[in-house]
Length: 334
Image (cartoon, rainbow, N blue to C red; front, side):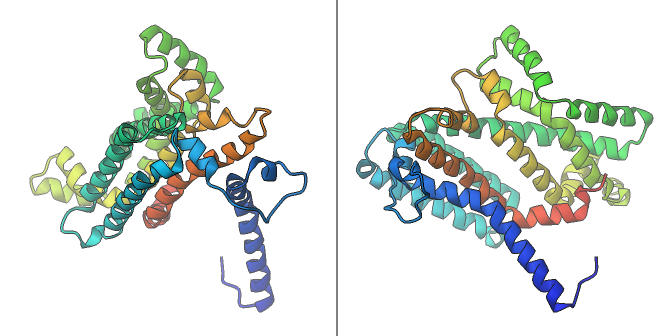
């Protein structure tokens, strides 16, 4: 694609991009406005853009206590989150591997999230958040571990068997989710794992694993064999060269694949709804306010949608440079 120097053409392109951006951002902005409205404002016949904002919807969503009682804990929580963000942004200046810093930050965040209900009277929606975090991290860890090893093996050992494995994986991935729900449900009942995090994690891994293998394999195909062969000549074994040489080179690709896996696990509704009865995740929890006749559910659903979207938005922004670098290095090649 060549760059145009025609001012009229560039102006039209910028107008089209601006309209497309507004078209995509407007629904989320409207949801944010509804989350700050009273039910009477959100359900008004004519849309109200001027209103008195309120945070009661978020308080009702997350807390079983008054906002005044939560204020000291909320201030402490904001300070902890701010400190974690600062450490994450300054990871390159800390004399330690970035991977260890990021793992430590994730561990600290999970520890804070699990400890908060012990000191604060949280509502049921917070339990949905914890379930989503557990399921997402479990799915992410297993999918990337298996996918990296499988993708590396299929990229390096080219044989007719690897072709069969890739075709079978692609065929399994092309099946609709409804075709897999009933077998997963039946296995959960037989194994006694129904309504547990383990069953949901294993099913999400099984659903997402073909995509992970295909995507990571495309990254490994872009890495020359000579790099790991040089490490093996220096005395490193196959696994050692994979961990110490290939994985650091593959880091942008692993993060890119991990972000797509995270989105699949975090936003899954069908499997989480069928395979759990009490341990719901955030998408299932939001659904309880989207089909009711209570006018107050509109604002609660909006607050729940915004609260569910913001963590993913921060993660995408934080890993944006790795995502762009990974996509540009060959992840979309097949």
